[in-house]
Length: 421
Image (cartoon, rainbow, N blue to C red):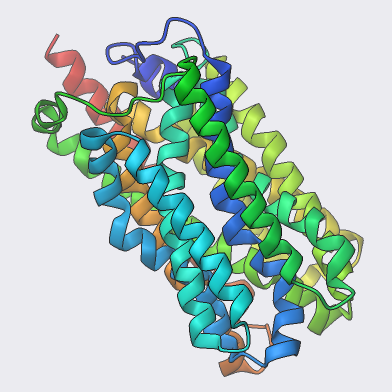
């Protein structure tokens, strides 16, 4: 059973491998697109935020809530969505998600000057995000063969930076002209396009879109305390890591505008190198896991490098060293989420991923709820950004310690499994 930790999820899922004998790439692509759509809706805000703050004068902490409210929706609905997908299938939940996205976009476009109604609009989008953030990775996984699953997991982890980069690229022609609304109209178009794509796949029957499980109660009963404990720790680490990542990515454009004198468009461009590195190294990490590279050393090592970067930020400045640090941060931030998304399969087996994804996404949502607002409050209290870097360093250090604990728990699960054979 050493392969569970050393080889990643492919070895872990040996007993509970996906039913697919061949990868259905249309199903994988649709799952990835759903998750990327969710990320686009969340991450269209940061490049637009400097323009919106100037235009409407939102309170800074309230503006941080425009990102954190996605987490509030996730905390409220993630576990219900995970269970519901197993019991009722995909169609009613995707219908809810697409409707919530469209309602939120319409409200934001109608009354952007009212900060509290904008928060409500973002909350509606957060409901759609919650569904797609669970259903997307799940669909990608169940349409992957056993051999391709680690690579697909690596690709799945790229949904956040794909959404970031898409939002940034769409923002570049309009942000320096003081416009943010086109990003919301594009969100409407993308939502309608994904709804039509899903309908076509369902009619054609070419992809595995069924997420219902007839024996979910039996599976839940067979879950061991060690597995449940490991999932909780993974969720906690996901929360710590996501809190600092989302806070940084939410406020990076505003930081560059305020501290380094960037224009909003140039600040949006600074988003691209780290996000691009995240995508590349999501896929690279998936390939490494498939090749048998140990999961826990990759995981803990990537977070440890981020701790060093955060502690070194005050000495780096905004020049070449700062740009290099952004790239290294992007590289390691590609490794970390790929490892996190591999954990449900490493702990539970691939056929039990729906509820497991809901658990770890709950942890992620806690981090997203706290991170952007906490950073905004730290900036308000200090009057500048100097508290940001030690705060990020401390949070990331806790995540690194949690990664080591996950490794210890996985070894215990391996021993327990081996002893029952």
